[in-house]
Length: 238
Image (cartoon, rainbow, N blue to C red; front, side, top):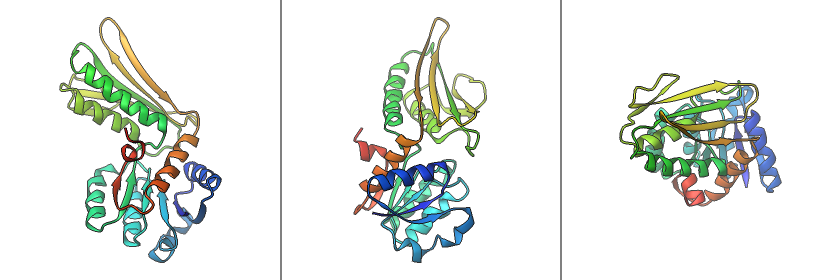
């Protein structure tokens, strides 16, 4: 496939390596210095675009791909207040959009474990739940999209939990998410259930960005020839 990379930071470069290893071609790279090259003429020359840019630019980048009839895989977080609108436009224009807050196989297994545990813990009100996420100092959004996904799944399954708050003490109905920015940490997420007598914890630690990059490239391969909105659930089947 011919791929357009939108965003050429650490993640974009890791995706480039993985894509080349899988015999794909990087035909277009868009970064801060050449934003004007993200246009219909250039996008029409590629099979898929992959956006790992910034929260401020992701929405417009996705729309640019829709306008060029170019399928897009997006892993940028921090813009999800506009997600429902993107899904609506994608369906109206019969376009192709794949989104995930995290493309790692391990993290998506972690998501499933989180939902199973939350289902169990709905019966045990003596346990409060909190989330901690740790990322590198260059990450622009907080909390991470992964942490938000974890929190939303818990809220869907635990009746007593109604919302999440960043760095705020839990009041019973709220899930506290603690966001830490430290060194070059690729990403760590910890879910803790705490009671007066014990604590239970599940944790995912990314060792590098290779798993994320592979998942993103697999997503790009998956949507070839397809129309609609897709997630890691569609790709992995769980």
